[in-house]
Length: 497
Figure 1 (tube, rainbow, N blue to C red):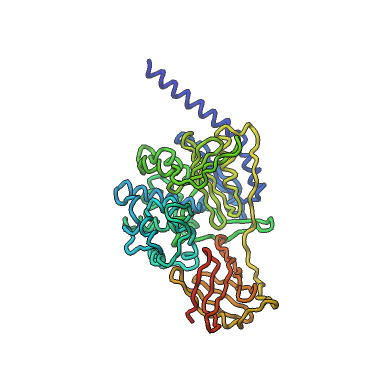
Figure 2 (cartoon, rainbow, N blue to C red):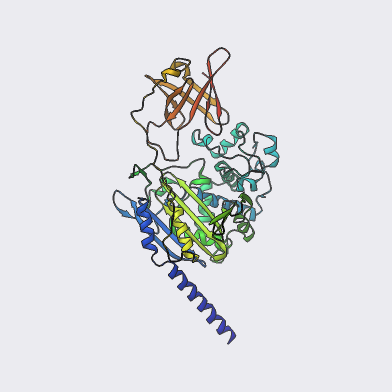
């Protein structure tokens, strides 16, 4: 009798929760479509998880705007930096298998690895890489402008790359840190990061539409093209193709597949009664391991405060609820994944518009509804949106006659190199100077004296913003001897010929 009453109570509880979720989602389609139109976006896909079940998943708008092909729950989008939690999961699995220690130095698993300072060599651990407190910070230019043949080859540059923050005692978001974590996973398993993601995560979670390369993505029947806005007009942009940086940005997935990913994290690393990641690691991963902004709220109704980071996840207090999240943005796409562990609720929003905060707007709106905080009113939001970057194909160099260069244009031509980055070439064509990197070519526009700035001459993926200053320096004989590129606080490249 007691057992029957218990089962009846449990069934009643589930029915009430289902009814509550249904009520919270009433009118959701209309609100999403209204926001989608307000952003002039092409398409998006949503999945909502509650109590270990995907209770809602749907596509809106188009995955192919030109041919008016609709987004579905299985449409594959690039998820950008939401990839970092996948790499974190790999490290967690290695930690569970006792193949590595989070307190060990990266050099234990990457032979010959050294950083630019003794302090970094002494202090930095794998846990620091996970938490973005290694001090490396943003050194993306070293692999974006100067890609290596193999990911591990980039490690040879680290002795010549200066730190951007205090090791251990500062928080500096670092894509390179996750690139290193992916390299460690490869070294310990003898397999590529791509293979490990597929074998250890995508396959066990039945994320059958997900992959780690644009080439594989576009072979599928149901994938999205990347888009953006320019002067209020929708335009298709180029795919971004992660290579060296795959461990931080390369996963492509659908809302339906990401629903299973959310279930894994809300269920303490377990998926359908199989423990893929230990409870201890998942708890630490979604904990506030390092505080980014611990400033207390100034108003009783302040929506967000206490920002922190764990292992591949951000944390914060959101309207009084503990929220775990990450966002991702690559050329033509943005994504948001929100987890509310105490409420066993999560949401993912995938969008094919990179130049806006649309995914977080939709995710916030759904979160407020699911938490019962919307007061039956439409979600109020401030739209963040900007134009895509486009080249000026008719751009020609214009000399500032009042502050002319100290030398003729030929004197600036030649090869320039830095051991922490690589080599680029400056050449002249007619009255124009061009800077050529291994994969990109930009025009140099004169600003004043020996200061130039780089600008686009052709379409590139939207994450590639070439707007850098190039300040040429002279040696004691008056010859052009080096140039300081305004990247990562200023990187000096020596002229070699």
